[in-house]
Each structure stands twice: as structure tokens, then as C-alpha cells.
Length: 281
Image (cartoon, rainbow, N blue to C red; front, side, top):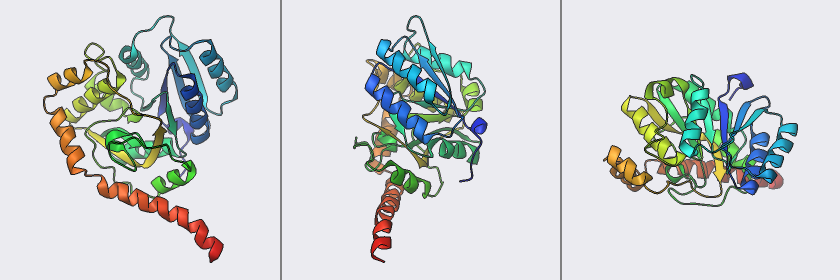
């Protein structure tokens, strides 16, 4: 994929969490895997403590990215805070990154390419070792993050960019088209307490308006564990979207991404073997 100017890439939105070790790893991976000059917004819903804020300040002082940090004086709540961030980026394409996620090289350029490939794509979710419907190497299971991130990123980049359908976006990392968000409205902060559920709800509303929620199979974002709903969120989803559980179950049983995962596994294995062929050739 040809180089993309940093100012043409989506804005990265990173809600700051309370886990300082996870945030440290996230920021290090983000800096290493993202083109210099990319706009990044670290937004703190009064979650970080003194050590977390010191960590952020050190990172801001050395990062190659065009990063800003804001902190609310009192917490709004996860969904309301994320909705506030999205509203401030009205009209812009953004990527919402989980605070414990670790992007692999090329991730943002590939997500930008996915959005640019088809105007009907509203959300794009990369592969993840703990990505539920976007999980690799296994569907719906939590695996360890890739040991060789560069090789995994190269294997993803070698995949055909067909962008198959997902039931909904997954919360480890999701690219959101600004124009689609404007039509669907913001997150429903009154019905859901977790960004996990609110993003699913937004995805389903976008789908109802004719937009697509897809897998960007050329990008990978690692994570230590899956995201999840808050108490009552799954009941709220089922009440609003009575067919959601059946849709999700059908996707998991039919596994339409089985061939894509197998192809990524083959790309990865080929990259592992190529240095050995060079050594013994």
C-alpha cells in the first residue's frame, strides 16, 4: 500500500483507562506502529491517577505523533465520555482504540485504506487475538498476543483486501466513518453503560441505514483480553435488537471467516519459513 499522508489518516481516539501497565504498553505500541504526525487524542474521564498522568506526560514529550491529552475534572461515564469525543470529531473519520490495545505496524494505514475502498463501509474492525468475531487464529477465543508483531503485520498486509461483513464492530479497535456517524446519530448513553455494547448498537443502526460493518483483514491490533458489556447491557441490546443474539450465534456457527483465517495462517507460516529457505538455499 502506498504511503498515506498523516493528515489524511483517521484521528485516533484513545479513552484513558485505570490500568497503568496496559496504558504504557498501548502507548508504546501506538507510537511504534503509527505514522509520525498522526493525530491522536488521549481523553481521560478522570480515570488516571498521578502515576498514569506522569506516564502520559512523559509519552507526550517524546512521541512522534501529533498527540493531545485532555482530562475531565469529574467522570461522565464510559459511554457518555466516548460520545463526547465522537461529537467533538463531527464529520471526521476516527479510530476508537481500546486503552489496553496494542496496534501492530501498518494498522492505521490499512484501516484508512479499508474506509477509502468502499463508500458504503461505516465501520472497519481489524483482526485481534482477542477479537471475538474478528478473532485470529481462532474465532471467539482469547489467544496470546502475537510473539512476532512485524511478521504478523506483514502476513496481514499480504491478505487480499476483500473486507468481509461482520455482525458488528468489535471494541479492541474500530474505524468509524464520520459521514455515517452523522446519519446514525451518537452513541446511546442512556441505554448502555459500556462502550462495548454502545458500539454494537451503533453498528446495528448503521447496518439498518444500509451501511456496512466489515473486517479489515489487512490490519491487526492485539489485546490481552476481550472487552465486555456492563451489567444490563446485553438485556438492553436484546430488547432493542431481538434478532441480535440469533445473528451472532449464526455467525459463530457458520464461521464465514474460516477461509480468511486459514489464509492468514498460511501467509504467516510462509513468512516464518522464508528466512529458513534463504539460510539453506
